[in-house]
Length: 435
Image 1 (tube, rainbow, N blue to C red):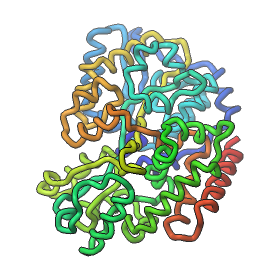
Image 2: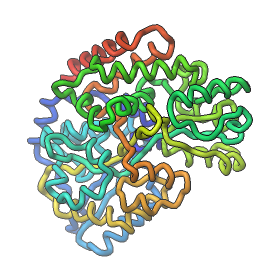
Image 3: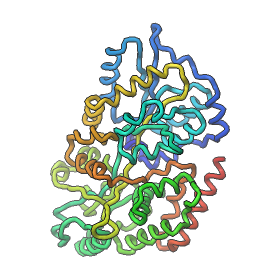
Image 4: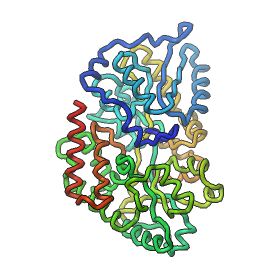
């Protein structure tokens, strides 16, 4: 979802798309004048850019309702086919100083904000507005007290499972801890099933699974944010990361994943699950929609979902969650009042809840989460309401490169210490190349 599952593009694949924009270029663009932004017939035009196809049918209804209430404003919604089509267009708009008023920031929200390209929405809209969102969605867009984006579609991860196969293998209920999952995996392999299908190709996909392990080790959902942003005192060779890698290695050696997990892509892992070749699937909250499209109706009615196992009995079941899709607003003053008025309208509780339910999307606000209709989506969202959400998207410069070295844990070619150093080197090199 969001970064993005639309158009067949995996969210993690989207992270690899697009050329880097230097801080100097961004700063220059922030000083450039914006285009006219005027609408037809003297109306104020608010341009909205994204690749979010999930609401391509529902969003026009909201726009029409807003324009009826605000006849002097016209909203132009442009949805690009995929991130690889969207990002070059956005970067050209940044360089040309003609930014759309509302735009999907992808992984550059903090970078754009720090270079004066996008607004501090907490300052503009007030904490009463931003506090409506899940903390994990706000945190990803916040640095030094300024918030440069707001969540649109949240996403969370869990373990989908086949209860009939659990029963056949003698697995008693949902595994509480990783040790319990390892024990269940042995039983499932005993009846010739892959225990848990997961995607680790590309390597960044593995971060969806691995990064919440850092939160489990630290019991602190803000720890990874410091690592992601390269703050002082945070390093991939830190004891916390090494301990998380040791836990990951333990899970791998427990033969929890399917054979060849390091080469498996997202769609392949999902297919293993709904064709009955794996008893479980580690995936995100877009999965119910995909299963409705691809799996047999009988299977869709029978599968269940559970939280990630905890690091120990009684500990919190930290679950990956951030807003895979969000909005930022240009810092240009022209059309600002109209832009913020539309944004407020879009997130009115009734309006936003309807949009999310009609598109089977996971909302990023607490009020809309209470009104989800899809039962599996409702269950997964309840984990966020319970406060189990933690970071899993590498928004910081170069951070996505940390995923590649995880393959050495999967194939047994590297120790946790060695992989931690390789992760640090990969991220450092990427940050140096982008500067």
